[in-house]
Image (cartoon, rainbow, N blue to C red; front, side, top):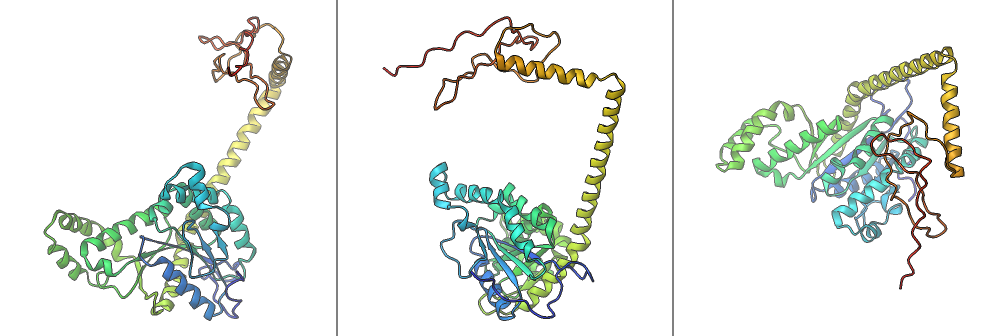
Amino acid sequence: MDDAGSSSAGAPSSAGGQAGATRRPVACIVLGMAGSGKTTLMQRLNSHLHEAKRPYYLINLDPAVLDTPFGANIDIRDTVNYKEVMKQYSLGPNGGILTSLNLFATKFHEVLGLVEARAEELDFVLLDTPGQIEIFTWSASGAIISESLAASMPTVVVYVVDTPRCSSAVTFMSNMLYACSILYKTKLPLLLVFNKTDTWMSDLDAFRDALQEEKSYMGTLATSMALMLEEFYAGLTSVGLSARTGEGVDDFFDAVQRAAAEYDETYGAELAARKKAAAEAEAARRRGDLGRFREDRRGGGSGEARSDESEEEGEGEDEDEEGDGRAGFTKARHTPPTARRQGVGGFHNVRPRAWDRSAGLVHRKTPLPPPPPPSTGG
């Protein structure tokens, strides 16, 4: 697909208001329960940005989707064959999606390279995730992708909520609890997107009244969680949006820009502090290594003597000759003498040296028995 949209004159900087700083796009990771309307939302955002002639990238991270209503600039399906992964590793649908995402995560640095090559031209990078939200949220590959993006550009997590399903106070509370877990897992700015104008977020009294009407155990549990998490979700940024009609899309992008500014104030500052601490730790490690090296030099070249011993040990292994075991020479691992293979496909038999199980000393005077003859198959 050709790059969706073209450069727009006077497009606002997406670096959170950093005047004179290098222009960076804002990455939006779209998450949501299955059936919440993520794909429809992505199509609406794609259409809006294309009509506004604002440059952006679309990335599809769902390997199991058959077709998308939008053309992705980068698609996981071009790299990983979901059905072949299921067949080769004998996996089910969810295991296939997780493994495909893990494989794609090993190449995500190449994706970042493509995005960063046009970073100064782009306003947004939109990522559509698999419908099984837990696969991306709680997997190692999801953490690698989100942290890699956050280390390169302002990143916002967009959590899509199916508003009709939230007509029940218990269901709404469950969505808020999941949003809380995502926020503290990623530590990134979180934007709640409702399919249409929401009432629970703006009228907490009505929400409490609806919870009181729930007489079941779930209603009691949701009431307790609401009292605990009220301060949490009262401070969240939420946007009412209709993915079908496009109502509220402008408000959505305004909220994304505010979340990008929040990224610079919170996650960006924390990231800079972590980088500084890592640089200081690396400098301290190098100073320690240099000090130990100087002590070894002053000690009369003991390090060179150890190096000579290692070289002699390697020569003894290559020649496979009998020799005297060195007193005090130990190994950190234990290799049993039975760990040998028959020569297959050009590989020779593996013949490890004999080991003393009690002290871990090498006994070269005790030769290994010859390998067993290969099986005749009859």
